[in-house]
Image (tube, rainbow, N blue to C red; front, top):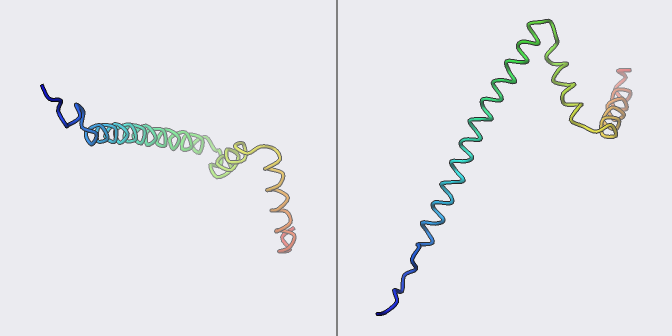
Length: 88
Protein backbone atom coordinates (compact mmCIF):
# COMPACT_ATOMS: atom_id res chain seq x y z
CA UNK A 1 0.00 0.00 0.00
CA UNK A 2 1.49 3.36 -1.09
CA UNK A 3 1.53 6.33 1.23
CA UNK A 4 -0.50 9.34 0.12
CA UNK A 5 1.51 12.30 -1.14
CA UNK A 6 -0.96 14.71 0.53
CA UNK A 7 -0.64 15.50 4.23
CA UNK A 8 -3.47 14.30 6.45
CA UNK A 9 -4.22 17.92 7.44
CA UNK A 10 -4.27 20.72 4.91
CA UNK A 11 -1.99 23.54 6.12
CA UNK A 12 -4.17 26.21 4.53
CA UNK A 13 -7.26 24.99 6.41
CA UNK A 14 -5.30 25.02 9.67
CA UNK A 15 -4.17 28.60 8.98
CA UNK A 16 -7.72 29.56 8.02
CA UNK A 17 -9.09 28.03 11.23
CA UNK A 18 -6.47 29.85 13.27
CA UNK A 19 -7.20 33.13 11.47
CA UNK A 20 -10.94 32.70 12.06
CA UNK A 21 -10.28 32.06 15.74
CA UNK A 22 -8.21 35.25 16.05
CA UNK A 23 -10.88 37.28 14.25
CA UNK A 24 -13.67 35.93 16.46
CA UNK A 25 -11.67 36.63 19.63
CA UNK A 26 -10.94 40.19 18.49
CA UNK A 27 -14.61 40.73 17.64
CA UNK A 28 -15.68 39.53 21.11
CA UNK A 29 -13.13 41.81 22.77
CA UNK A 30 -14.25 44.76 20.64
CA UNK A 31 -17.84 44.14 21.79
CA UNK A 32 -16.67 44.06 25.42
CA UNK A 33 -14.66 47.25 24.86
CA UNK A 34 -17.74 48.99 23.43
CA UNK A 35 -19.75 47.88 26.44
CA UNK A 36 -17.10 49.17 28.83
CA UNK A 37 -16.88 52.48 26.96
CA UNK A 38 -20.63 52.85 27.34
CA UNK A 39 -20.37 52.08 31.06
CA UNK A 40 -17.61 54.66 31.48
CA UNK A 41 -19.70 57.25 29.62
CA UNK A 42 -22.59 56.52 32.00
CA UNK A 43 -20.35 57.04 35.05
CA UNK A 44 -19.17 60.39 33.68
CA UNK A 45 -22.79 61.39 33.06
CA UNK A 46 -23.70 60.38 36.60
CA UNK A 47 -20.78 62.41 38.00
CA UNK A 48 -21.82 65.40 35.90
CA UNK A 49 -25.38 65.01 37.15
CA UNK A 50 -24.18 65.33 40.73
CA UNK A 51 -22.24 68.49 39.93
CA UNK A 52 -18.72 67.29 39.18
CA UNK A 53 -16.75 68.79 36.28
CA UNK A 54 -16.21 65.96 33.80
CA UNK A 55 -13.25 67.66 32.11
CA UNK A 56 -11.47 67.87 35.48
CA UNK A 57 -12.29 64.22 36.21
CA UNK A 58 -10.80 63.15 32.88
CA UNK A 59 -7.65 65.18 33.57
CA UNK A 60 -7.25 63.62 37.03
CA UNK A 61 -7.64 60.12 35.59
CA UNK A 62 -5.03 60.95 32.95
CA UNK A 63 -2.64 62.23 35.61
CA UNK A 64 -3.14 59.20 37.84
CA UNK A 65 -1.98 56.95 35.00
CA UNK A 66 1.43 58.63 35.10
CA UNK A 67 4.10 58.17 37.74
CA UNK A 68 5.14 61.07 39.96
CA UNK A 69 8.32 61.90 38.00
CA UNK A 70 6.46 61.97 34.69
CA UNK A 71 3.80 64.29 36.16
CA UNK A 72 6.46 66.61 37.59
CA UNK A 73 8.26 66.80 34.25
CA UNK A 74 5.01 67.55 32.41
CA UNK A 75 4.07 70.25 34.93
CA UNK A 76 7.55 71.85 34.71
CA UNK A 77 7.38 72.01 30.90
CA UNK A 78 3.86 73.44 31.04
CA UNK A 79 5.00 76.07 33.56
CA UNK A 80 8.00 76.96 31.38
CA UNK A 81 5.83 77.36 28.27
CA UNK A 82 3.25 79.44 30.15
CA UNK A 83 6.01 81.75 31.44
CA UNK A 84 7.41 82.11 27.92
CA UNK A 85 3.96 83.18 26.74
CA UNK A 86 3.48 85.59 29.64
CA UNK A 87 0.56 83.61 31.03
CA UNK A 88 1.93 83.42 34.60
